[in-house]
Amino acid sequence: MAQTVSICRNLATAMLLGLFMLSMLGTSPFADAQSPVDCCLSYSKKPLPARLIVGYVRQFANELCTINAIIFYTRKGRRICANPNEDWVHKIIVGFLRKEMKQN
Image (cartoon, rainbow, N blue to C red):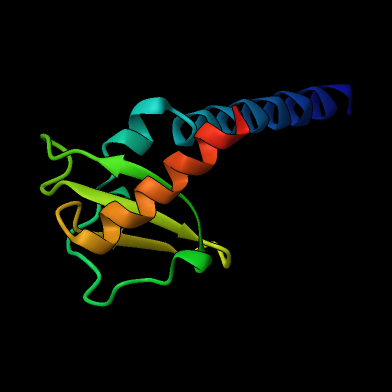
């Protein structure tokens, strides 16, 4: 009986260790960086109203992403890919920069 309990404990410990190791693979900084899902593959065809946008990041074309883009984040948590050469995109970015300057 004691031997059976010991085997079960060892098995449970091994399973927990395995699950921990699998979870660490998912949080590796390289796992996210190499995912093509994180890259914009095309641009939105319609301009967005500036009032809907709460932030943005720049995407640079490199070995992971094929196009330069501005990724706008909306109030509803959506990601919108925009062409950084479009006038409406420049206007929104300038608006964000002005807000930052006023806050400082």
